[in-house]
Image (cartoon, rainbow, N blue to C red; front, side, top):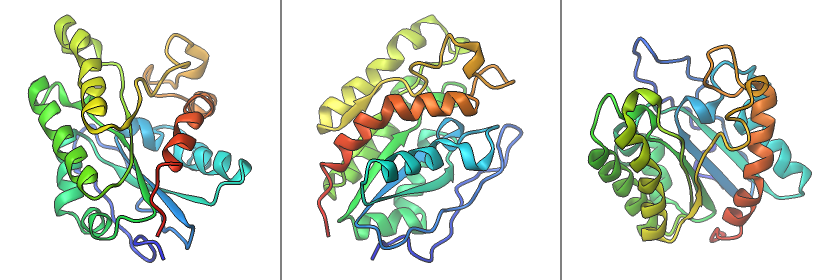
Length: 221
C-alpha cells in the first residue's frame, strides 16, 4: 500500500506571490507512485485543475498502460522549503521511511534567486537528492531557465546546477520544464511565464519518455 494513502498535506508558505495549494492527492494501491515536488510550474499555476501537469501526466501514463499513481504534493516555493518538506514534513518523512515503489520528479530552484545565491540553491538541492539517493528513490531532476532579473552570470550558470547534481547522483535529467513552450506565446498563460493548458500538454508530451525511464528505475515493493 502506498505511504500516501489517506494522507493530506500542503506545503504552502503564504506570501504575496503564493498561489492556492490544491492539497495532497491521495494515492491508491498503485504499484508505483511518482511524487512530484515542485513550484508553481509543476502544479500548473493558472491552469484549470483538470488540465495541469500532474493530471495530464497521470492520463498519459494511464494511456500507456502503466500502473502508476502521480501524487501532487502542492506548491513548494523554493529549494529550502523543498528540503524542509522532505526532512521535516510528515509526508516527506513518510516517503523516506517507506521508499519502495516510489519515484520523485524534482522541479525546484527557479524562485531562489531573490532569496539565496546559487551556491545555496545547489546545497539545498544536493541535500534533497542525497536523502533520496540514500533511500534508493529514483529521481527525475527537472531544471528550468532562470528568470531574466537574476542577472546574466546567474542565468548562464543556472543550468549547470541541475546537470552537475543529476550527474553526481546518477539521476535522470530533464533540463528545462518549458522545453517546447518557451518562445511560443500561444502556449503561455496571461502572466507571460507559466504554460497554459495547451502548453501543459506539450510539457507532458515532451517529458513523458523521461518519466517512463524513471518508472523503469523504481524498486518495486
